[in-house]
Image 1 (cartoon, one colour):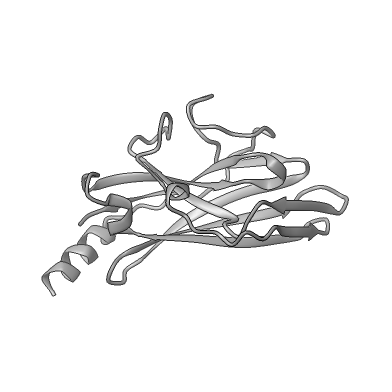
Image 2 (cartoon, rainbow, N blue to C red):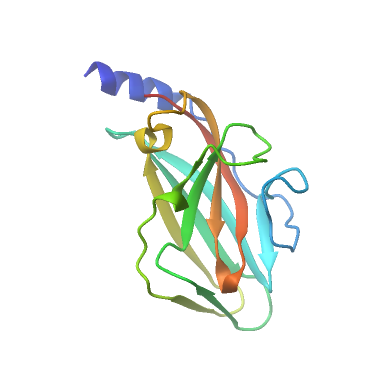
Length: 169
């Protein structure tokens, strides 16, 4: 019970950041231009993300990425595998430099292409999740982490800011 109470207290401090700043229209990379944008548009498709914390035991961080056709024509997007969205955690709010934790390092994904055909204005959502204890592992300290969602459409990498949360052991 004591551990569950600590997790609940840590999560109650979580401050989630909503996405919605103007996109750059370019592939985003940490460490360039002050960190990843809150949204990115590539080929008429806009990518946004947000994080939520499930106060379960163990506490779990979920990132929901939205893929939306903002053009006036049908758009096709292909992802290389079943891991359409992956989480990254950074220690600094700018989300620059190497991530403190990268879900892609240990992800096990189905080796099947995920193909989308989006009508104008149509969107789809994809969710990635990770337990707080997996993120912190053996080496990361408790504290505030800044999340991004990484998507890999059509051979590109798109990384968008996805919120922040206080994580504890």
